[in-house]
Length: 224
Image 1 (cartoon, one colour):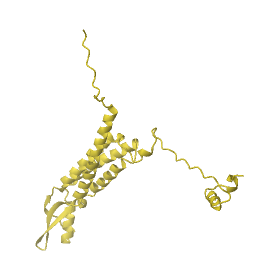
Image 2 (cartoon, helix red, strand yellow; image 1 turned 90 degrees about the horizontal axis):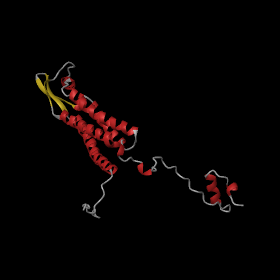
Image 3 (cartoon, one colour; image 1 turned 60 degrees about the horizontal axis):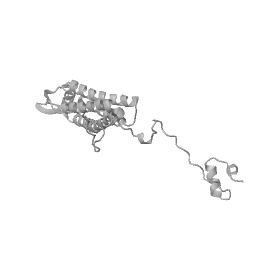
Image 4 (tube, helix red, strand yellow; image 1 turned 120 degrees about the vertical axis):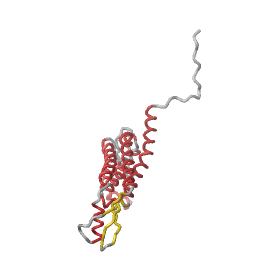
């Protein structure tokens, strides 16, 4: 006799649809991209206000300590961090091609922060300018210049922005939009329907004035 497979238990749940799995994965990516992007922008802006280099300048036989912050060294990382933060918010305000464009801008912001910080990390121009201002000599330069670890914090922030941008590029099309709950199932916005005007009572001056405010002719709409 042929073995008959046992019946499936009534309590066994059917396998979830692939679309539902993709939706859950997209929402997990959203829950990860938002804090990563916000934290990355905050780290870049915070690091930009900290000293990136220290040095000394000689003035009248004295050694003066001078330093240059990240924003004095280069203003690009802070500007790119703000662009990335704006792009992170704008992801939810656009759809389709616009969402890909904004996600790409977020990704490029992270790449730009990392590239600029690494390229300008050892630049002494800003600390030399600080030395010239401290000594009053336009050609004064700083000596014993050292670089702090704050630029690496900016690099970490740029990497977080980059990860958030890649998540947006990969899963952004399935993220909810700000106005999605007002759209119809076919993707078109519903046209607001004008409420029907209340019946006009020609004996009430209030109704006549309301009709005039609506641009109607009360003598034409009044019942005869």
